[in-house]
Image 1 (spheres, rainbow, N blue to C red):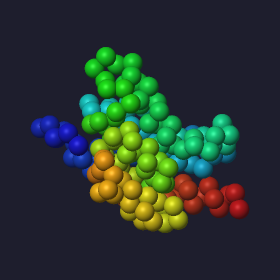
Image 2 (image 1 turned 90 degrees about the horizontal axis):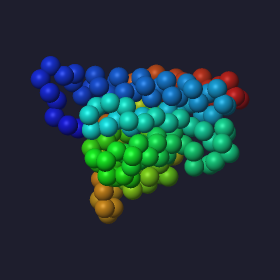
Image 3 (image 1 turned 60 degrees about the horizontal axis):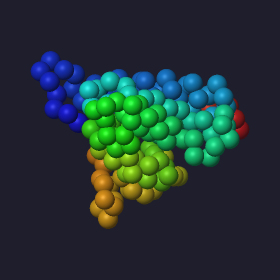
Length: 167
């Protein structure tokens, strides 16, 4: 994360603020019957560069996870920026309401995202420390700093309520 400027919020405060934006995306996913997972990519300047939400049901695309949607949008935004490096999301931070799965962790590594902040752990399919740890796998060519458990209770509650209503 870029060094904090004098009088700027602590990283924990920024992480919570960013996670609230990701939670907003998660809530929007529910309108299409998708599992409520949301993600945002924060640019090097600390502003939201792109957002995404689960859209598997909405699009019929099994790869339309929130993280992939946000990564695609961020890469598109940077490719139109003369100062950007296109698909490389260096100096960006991905914030997501649920621990990334193996597919999303692979996309994070391939996009060269240096930091991931997530809310709830995914004990069944998580790939950022619970089941697998792809983001910090030393045999890969890129490693990611991981900040887990940000607004964990809120992120977990939206998922539990969704699945309780669909059982």
